Length: 388
Image (cartoon, rainbow, N blue to C red; front, side, top):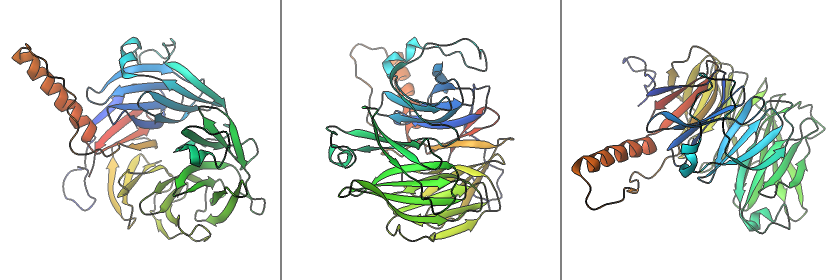
């Protein structure tokens, strides 16, 4: 468990440090119910790590430029977004992992590796560092944006071609469904972060901008258009990241300044945040809310990961290990305490084999159920922490 600030014990140390990238880490994602960790760097390299063994199981260069974001879509699909103006969906099944190279970029940064099966590619605007956001929509929810929606659809939000605009695509169709235009009454600059989500029956979109503003839209299915509900300014510098605490019906923003702000999802027309805190630490990005909506964390330009209470916004812990700035952060999903026993009983096995299977199972279960935070740094390393 990570250390509280007022403790007299020595500073907490990472449970493990992944060393495999040559370039700074830009994105991290836990995959397959916390059995894998996907990391992407500034040179376009992707590494899929086995969390139980802490070893790579697949290494490839997925983009010709920096990785902006990585995510998972079902157990066998990965989504990556690069500054080469490509958003890609790969199929990488666990049963295929043995066919991939495990030679790390730090060992050989030149030779291309075997790639997973590329299912989809969408050409998108990446003039800035704004990464994509997505949410899964049922056929009825997706039908609000497209009358042709006949199946569960992934709605993907990315910066549009015009400054400040946001484009909405669907997967697997790769169709552009709509463009959300930035208001012309306020000078916003570039979109720095976006979040698309389903709240009850409504599809909502939140974007943070270079000016420090956040805009909140809701899709009106009767008029078939996006309605701007509010434009708020909680930051004096560019908004770097935002995330939603669904159970509390709030969203949180961090920026290049030292402010973290919480905003209401139930009263989106208000232009004032619910609460702001001045952390005295500028440059906190990759803000993430854990899946239980109890804590959030940020990756700091000073190399520290800071953990806050979602309800009170009180700082709970500071994770200090990296000597250079942190740019990426991810929480493991919280799973039920009892992980289903996946070991297959076999007759005639020796006691040694059974003992080995039990040890492997225990290691896998621990990897899946630990409350991990992973942080990626400019130093190319990824620290793994066990917290709360």
